[in-house]
Length: 269
Length: 347
Ligand SMILES: Nc1ncnc2c1ncn2[C@@H]1O[C@H](COP(=O)(O)OP(=O)(O)OP(=O)(O)O)[C@@H](O)[C@H]1O
Ligand SMILES: [Mg+2]
Image 1 (cartoon, rainbow over the protein chains, first blue to last red):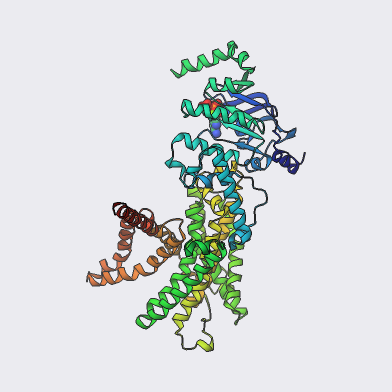
Image 2: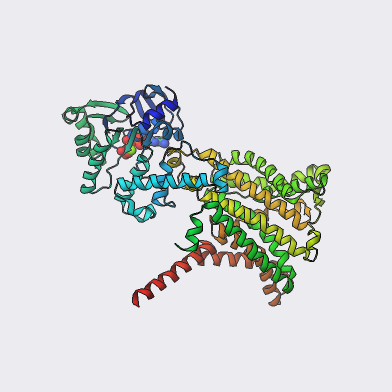
């Protein structure tokens, strides 16, 4: 499928499908991923869990082109996207949030969100330099779009604030707005619930459920209750290996999974 | 709606363009009046115009985009030599065309430097651009037949048109400098308001997050470098017109460092700060010199003192105003607005 075609499929609100096959990643001596195969079917919310250092973030890093795998394939909507450059994700309709927020603190909230928007037909350098009406119109439309996204998440009152001055929970919402403004077909969330209050977690669950119509979601999360209540399918990583895959009930009753979590808690202590 | 808002609603080009024209007229009048008091100050103001152009480009590159360049003096040299060489062949060419040619040549050179710079970070980038600043003047000496070595190339003086033959030379020079300076600031201000400005700043802060949200990091960094280099080229051209010379001695490493000092003193990353900083850089050495002479110190101390004093002034200023002059002004305005609001609340 051509890039233009997949982008327009994404604009039509069709959820995307992700598949990774026998993915391996090594950092020097550390094997971060070891032959991992898993999929995020179109329209699904899939959980990816595992103890600290299991390789969850690394998996996202490979999919988003930040880390080159030693072996294996990444397929998006049936097309191999190995070796994709990170800036191409936006055009493909893949959005990702970062474990550590990664907001731009020198930019206002609305500017942060404006950057996340699709970079389709923006006016060129010359019209921006000259401040032509075309450039003004584009900027105004983008601003409106970003404001609408902030409103949709109920944080429009913070539009002109700087992220660093806001409570952590609001910052998390800003990073979600920044990921959602491009109307992604696939959303990769790296620990979206960390640092959120119980109430905010409830709001997050409701939000993610409401997004399900329009996009597939891969959710990396340590809060297992949240994963169990949201995801129809869960993959479990441990030391870079996929040790289990299945429905929430199957995962809860899997001995390997409980052992892995118990093991990590023992070493953590 | 205030008058300002009404103008702003007509678009960026009109708003900034109008401000630019107002600036040219206002400063032009000040220069005219100042000349009868002190012609030398007016001559120095024409230096401020080109230093400010280069500083504006540098503050976008370093302050907004986060790429440190110690080599902008060398890029100015490229602009100055282009001007000298073009005028050697086409003696009467319109200055505007000569300046555009200088901008283009420097921009092309900046593509090469910028592409290398986009691969380098922190100290490596500083080192590479430092190499440019130190090495490039050597080219003029190595290829003496073209560039006339240490002596450099002369540049014919800008003469005022016959209708304005009463205008003193230094006033005409400063007036002419105001136009490219205003155009530069207007264009940069336009750009910084758009996606490009946001992308520049986003990259400075977090390259990974920038790439993940669709910004082509390296390409944007090269764009910033070329933009900044184009400003340096224009500044160099104007400098050649002002000093009637393009010679290696005019572009020492200290010129690059002065530009950096200017943008830091003025307020890193802000366009008005580039103006404040350029004024300080051009005028401070004189004031310090006067102060120095007034202290009647033995000559061995007196000769070294200006530089030391400049360092002290710089450090004290940065401690007092960590965000530069523009940052200080902003705080002052915010503070006064706060007091007015408090007063209004009490009344
Ligand atoms: N860029 C890197 N260079 C070297 N080692 C890395 C790099 N990124 C990750 N690792 C290592 O790879 C392993 C997997 O890390 P990863 O961040 O993917 O874990 P995770 O499952 O996301 O953990 P957490 O739950 O703590 O976020 C760890 O041992 C980590 O130290
Ligand atoms: Mg992680």
